[in-house]
Length: 98
Ligand code: FES
Image (tube, rainbow, N blue to C red; front, side):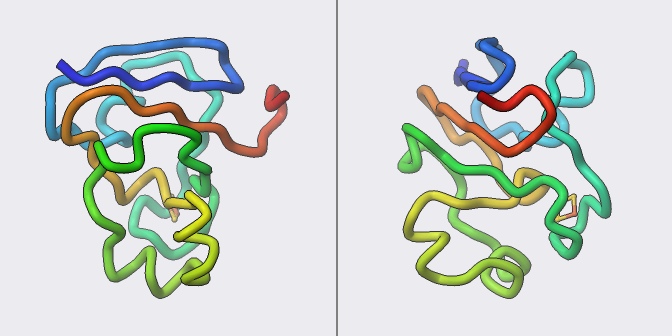
């Protein structure tokens, strides 16, 4: 099982290894929002605070949408990433962000 800490919601949830974040969020009451779900609108933009090594590599869509230096700084598109294993901590801008 993998674990994701949703920092703005002060919540931790478990998921199966390899699960897509967007699928995980479907059943959760978290404030991370999704729009297009295809990596083109940026609504799901987030920052990985910890555990980047436990995520899938950035997709072509993320590389098209985000600047390389932002990716290096931990930014990702939530609709594109999978949690491979272990623990990951993410944060994002939003109404309840701290
Ligand atoms: S939901 Fe549009 S980029 Fe992720």
